[in-house]
Amino acid sequence: MIAVKKYYTESQEKMARYAKAIAHPARVYILDFLAGNIDKCCYSGDMAEDIPIARSTLSEHLKALKEAGLIQGEINPPYIKYCINKENWEEARDMFDGFFRK
Image (cartoon, rainbow, N blue to C red):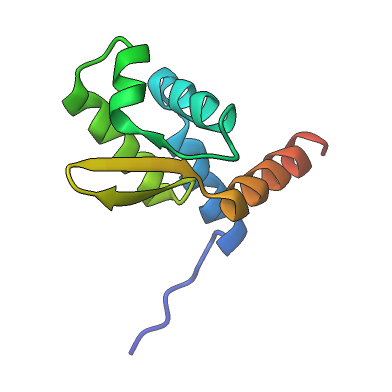
């Protein structure tokens, strides 16, 4: 087995994953919406009424944020409610804060 040289730290890769997830204004809007309701979860239908994009597009953005670990979802058929993943949210905040303070 040949060892592959790794150029990036785990922290750098994680920060890049968070950055990619928030690299679209609709995703920033979604995170802002959920962060404003950080003590409770919101249904995707509630967000669909506030953001001027198709529900299918909203679903794709929610999926990307969930895959990055910034939000979490709970399925209660036929509804899905989302909220900020507080642990990863704080981690991302600390990472970016430390990065921009350099």
